[in-house]
Length: 152
Image (cartoon, rainbow, N blue to C red; front, side, top):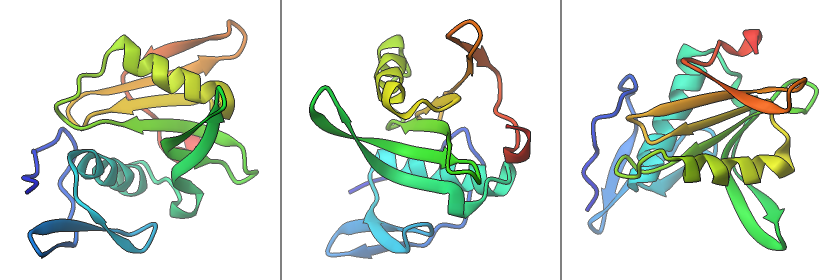
């Protein structure tokens, strides 16, 4: 059974239920209960942080969007769009015990080679890595924090 790890994100009043020894968390965006895994715990916290702290519109956040990379079906954890439908941010969530390493950034970069988002965010709930694409130089610049949605 899953025991939630305290994260380096504000606490949120999630709807958590248990059925037949399986713990579920209610996903407000998808309007359904999901099995509460360590990665889902991080994803739900980060989504709430985007919405409540960074003022990201719920309607512009997509969860677990599919993509094809090297003829393989993959999925990105979270994609954020602007009102014109352009991809602004690719967010990859890992379980708290998974370290954010260069290989994790490489994975997200490969996904972003398809998405072409201006931002890549990596989080395990304890450590957060934020990178913004510098289009002129063709590389990512790492920053300490992401701005609020309207400042992106």
